[in-house]
Amino acid sequence: MDKLVLASRNKNKIAEMKALVSDLGIKVYSALDFPELEEVDEDQDTLEGNALKKARYVHQHTGLPSLSDDTGLEVDALGGAPGVYSARYAGEKVTYQDNVLKLLREMNGKEDRAAQFRTVVALVTAENEHTFEGVCKGVIIDHQRGEKGFGYDPVFLPQEFDQTFAELDSKVKNEISHRGRAIQKFISFLKG
Ligand code: IMP
Image (cartoon, rainbow, N blue to C red; front, side, top):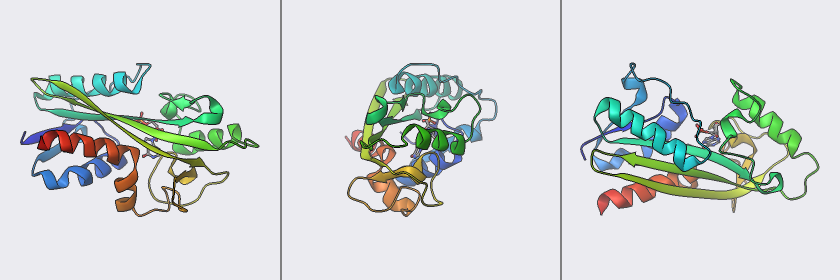
Protein backbone atom coordinates (compact mmCIF):
# COMPACT_ATOMS: atom_id res chain seq x y z
CA MET A 1 0.00 0.00 0.00
CA ASP A 2 1.56 3.31 -1.05
CA LYS A 3 -1.46 5.62 -0.77
CA LEU A 4 -4.21 5.98 1.80
CA VAL A 5 -7.22 8.30 2.12
CA LEU A 6 -8.42 9.18 5.60
CA ALA A 7 -12.22 9.20 5.37
CA SER A 8 -12.64 12.32 7.50
CA ARG A 9 -12.97 16.09 7.22
CA ASN A 10 -12.36 16.60 10.94
CA LYS A 11 -9.06 18.53 11.07
CA ASN A 12 -8.28 17.36 14.62
CA LYS A 13 -8.75 13.71 13.71
CA ILE A 14 -6.80 14.10 10.46
CA ALA A 15 -3.88 15.68 12.32
CA GLU A 16 -3.86 12.90 14.94
CA MET A 17 -4.14 10.12 12.37
CA LYS A 18 -1.50 11.61 10.04
CA ALA A 19 0.93 11.91 12.96
CA LEU A 20 0.28 8.28 13.88
CA VAL A 21 0.94 6.87 10.40
CA SER A 22 3.71 9.31 9.45
CA ASP A 23 6.50 6.71 9.73
CA LEU A 24 4.96 4.26 7.27
CA GLY A 25 6.18 5.95 4.10
CA ILE A 26 2.63 6.04 2.71
CA LYS A 27 1.24 9.13 0.94
CA VAL A 28 -1.70 10.08 3.16
CA TYR A 29 -4.67 12.06 1.84
CA SER A 30 -7.91 12.98 3.57
CA ALA A 31 -11.47 13.69 2.44
CA LEU A 32 -10.42 17.38 2.34
CA ASP A 33 -8.29 16.54 -0.72
CA PHE A 34 -11.39 15.25 -2.57
CA PRO A 35 -13.93 18.10 -2.44
CA GLU A 36 -16.37 16.10 -4.59
CA LEU A 37 -16.90 13.61 -1.74
CA GLU A 38 -20.19 14.03 0.07
CA GLU A 39 -20.76 13.95 3.80
CA VAL A 40 -21.60 10.38 4.87
CA ASP A 41 -24.61 10.11 7.15
CA GLU A 42 -23.43 8.33 10.32
CA ASP A 43 -26.77 6.57 10.80
CA GLN A 44 -25.59 3.09 11.84
CA ASP A 45 -26.18 1.95 15.39
CA THR A 46 -22.62 0.75 16.00
CA LEU A 47 -19.19 2.37 15.72
CA GLU A 48 -18.16 -0.53 13.45
CA GLY A 49 -21.12 0.14 11.14
CA ASN A 50 -20.39 3.85 10.82
CA ALA A 51 -16.65 3.33 10.36
CA LEU A 52 -17.19 0.77 7.59
CA LYS A 53 -19.84 2.93 5.91
CA LYS A 54 -17.48 5.94 5.73
CA ALA A 55 -14.47 3.92 4.54
CA ARG A 56 -16.51 2.05 1.88
CA TYR A 57 -17.90 5.29 0.47
CA VAL A 58 -14.48 6.95 0.23
CA HIS A 59 -12.89 3.83 -1.27
CA GLN A 60 -15.64 3.52 -3.89
CA HIS A 61 -15.27 7.15 -4.94
CA THR A 62 -11.48 7.48 -4.91
CA GLY A 63 -10.41 3.94 -5.84
CA LEU A 64 -7.78 4.20 -3.10
CA PRO A 65 -7.42 2.30 0.18
CA SER A 66 -9.47 4.18 2.73
CA LEU A 67 -9.19 4.42 6.50
CA SER A 68 -11.97 5.81 8.68
CA ASP A 69 -12.52 6.24 12.38
CA ASP A 70 -15.67 6.32 14.46
CA THR A 71 -15.42 7.12 18.14
CA GLY A 72 -17.79 7.05 21.08
CA LEU A 73 -17.51 8.08 24.70
CA GLU A 74 -19.07 5.35 26.87
CA VAL A 75 -19.94 6.47 30.40
CA ASP A 76 -20.74 3.74 32.97
CA ALA A 77 -23.15 5.81 35.08
CA LEU A 78 -25.09 6.68 31.92
CA GLY A 79 -25.45 3.06 30.80
CA GLY A 80 -22.80 3.47 28.09
CA ALA A 81 -24.23 6.74 26.69
CA PRO A 82 -23.54 8.80 24.68
CA GLY A 83 -21.66 5.98 22.86
CA VAL A 84 -22.30 5.86 19.14
CA TYR A 85 -24.38 9.07 19.52
CA SER A 86 -21.50 11.09 21.03
CA ALA A 87 -21.41 13.64 18.19
CA ARG A 88 -25.15 14.38 18.54
CA TYR A 89 -25.49 14.05 22.30
CA ALA A 90 -26.96 17.52 22.83
CA GLY A 91 -28.88 17.44 19.51
CA GLU A 92 -28.30 17.84 15.76
CA LYS A 93 -25.78 20.48 14.60
CA VAL A 94 -24.39 21.15 18.07
CA THR A 95 -20.93 22.31 19.12
CA TYR A 96 -18.37 20.36 21.15
CA GLN A 97 -19.20 22.73 24.03
CA ASP A 98 -22.93 21.89 23.87
CA ASN A 99 -22.09 18.18 24.19
CA VAL A 100 -19.59 18.68 27.00
CA LEU A 101 -22.01 20.87 28.97
CA LYS A 102 -24.79 18.31 28.58
CA LEU A 103 -22.42 15.57 29.80
CA LEU A 104 -21.43 17.64 32.86
CA ARG A 105 -25.14 18.21 33.66
CA GLU A 106 -25.99 14.51 33.31
CA MET A 107 -23.03 13.57 35.51
CA ASN A 108 -23.84 16.15 38.18
CA GLY A 109 -23.85 14.41 41.60
CA LYS A 110 -22.94 10.99 40.18
CA GLU A 111 -20.33 9.13 42.22
CA ASP A 112 -19.35 6.60 39.57
CA ARG A 113 -17.29 8.67 37.09
CA ALA A 114 -15.82 5.76 35.06
CA ALA A 115 -15.85 6.10 31.28
CA GLN A 116 -14.00 4.96 28.20
CA PHE A 117 -13.39 6.25 24.73
CA ARG A 118 -13.76 3.55 22.10
CA THR A 119 -12.61 3.95 18.50
CA VAL A 120 -13.18 1.62 15.62
CA VAL A 121 -10.93 2.20 12.64
CA ALA A 122 -12.02 0.60 9.35
CA LEU A 123 -9.72 -0.13 6.42
CA VAL A 124 -11.37 -0.74 3.05
CA THR A 125 -9.24 -1.72 0.06
CA ALA A 126 -10.08 -3.24 -3.32
CA GLU A 127 -9.39 -6.67 -1.80
CA ASN A 128 -10.55 -6.55 1.78
CA GLU A 129 -12.21 -4.88 4.75
CA HIS A 130 -10.74 -4.88 8.26
CA THR A 131 -11.61 -3.17 11.54
CA PHE A 132 -9.33 -2.34 14.49
CA GLU A 133 -10.55 -1.30 17.94
CA GLY A 134 -8.87 0.91 20.52
CA VAL A 135 -10.07 1.67 24.04
CA CYS A 136 -8.87 4.24 26.56
CA LYS A 137 -10.28 4.07 30.08
CA GLY A 138 -10.57 7.01 32.44
CA VAL A 139 -12.99 9.17 34.39
CA ILE A 140 -15.21 12.16 33.68
CA ILE A 141 -14.23 15.07 35.90
CA ASP A 142 -16.75 17.67 37.07
CA HIS A 143 -15.37 20.72 35.25
CA GLN A 144 -13.43 21.45 32.06
CA ARG A 145 -9.63 21.58 32.15
CA GLY A 146 -7.25 22.38 29.29
CA GLU A 147 -7.33 23.96 25.86
CA LYS A 148 -5.81 21.28 23.63
CA GLY A 149 -7.49 18.48 21.70
CA PHE A 150 -11.18 18.58 20.83
CA GLY A 151 -14.58 17.15 21.66
CA TYR A 152 -14.86 15.74 25.18
CA ASP A 153 -11.10 16.04 25.86
CA PRO A 154 -11.43 18.79 28.56
CA VAL A 155 -13.51 16.53 30.85
CA PHE A 156 -11.74 13.18 30.27
CA LEU A 157 -8.97 12.17 32.63
CA PRO A 158 -7.24 9.05 31.29
CA GLN A 159 -6.39 6.31 33.80
CA GLU A 160 -3.03 6.79 35.54
CA PHE A 161 -2.72 10.43 34.42
CA ASP A 162 -3.52 13.57 36.35
CA GLN A 163 -3.99 15.71 33.25
CA THR A 164 -7.03 15.65 30.98
CA PHE A 165 -6.67 14.87 27.29
CA ALA A 166 -7.01 18.64 26.73
CA GLU A 167 -4.03 19.31 29.04
CA LEU A 168 -1.74 16.53 27.78
CA ASP A 169 0.71 17.09 24.97
CA SER A 170 -0.78 15.80 21.71
CA LYS A 171 2.09 13.31 21.39
CA VAL A 172 1.19 11.78 24.75
CA LYS A 173 -2.52 11.73 23.90
CA ASN A 174 -1.70 9.91 20.66
CA GLU A 175 0.36 7.30 22.50
CA ILE A 176 -2.35 6.32 24.98
CA SER A 177 -5.61 7.27 23.30
CA HIS A 178 -8.38 5.08 21.89
CA ARG A 179 -7.55 6.37 18.38
CA GLY A 180 -3.81 5.87 18.90
CA ARG A 181 -4.37 2.29 20.06
CA ALA A 182 -6.66 1.45 17.14
CA ILE A 183 -4.18 2.93 14.66
CA GLN A 184 -1.31 1.01 16.29
CA LYS A 185 -3.25 -2.21 15.57
CA PHE A 186 -3.74 -1.07 11.96
CA ILE A 187 0.02 -0.40 11.68
CA SER A 188 0.90 -3.83 13.12
CA PHE A 189 -1.50 -5.38 10.60
CA LEU A 190 0.18 -3.53 7.71
CA LYS A 191 3.62 -4.61 8.90
CA GLY A 192 2.35 -8.19 8.86
P1 IMP B 1 -17.06 10.84 15.58
O1 IMP B 1 -16.12 9.68 15.58
O2 IMP B 1 -16.55 11.95 14.72
O3 IMP B 1 -18.47 10.44 15.26
O4 IMP B 1 -17.00 11.43 17.04
C1 IMP B 1 -18.04 11.30 17.96
C2 IMP B 1 -17.92 12.36 19.02
O5 IMP B 1 -16.87 12.04 19.90
C3 IMP B 1 -17.69 13.77 18.52
O6 IMP B 1 -18.47 14.66 19.29
C4 IMP B 1 -16.24 14.00 18.79
O7 IMP B 1 -15.97 15.32 19.12
C5 IMP B 1 -15.97 13.11 19.99
N1 IMP B 1 -14.62 12.60 19.90
C6 IMP B 1 -14.09 11.81 18.95
N2 IMP B 1 -12.80 11.57 19.20
C7 IMP B 1 -12.51 12.25 20.33
C8 IMP B 1 -11.30 12.42 21.08
O8 IMP B 1 -10.22 11.91 20.76
N3 IMP B 1 -11.40 13.18 22.19
C9 IMP B 1 -12.57 13.78 22.58
N4 IMP B 1 -13.70 13.67 21.91
C10 IMP B 1 -13.67 12.91 20.79
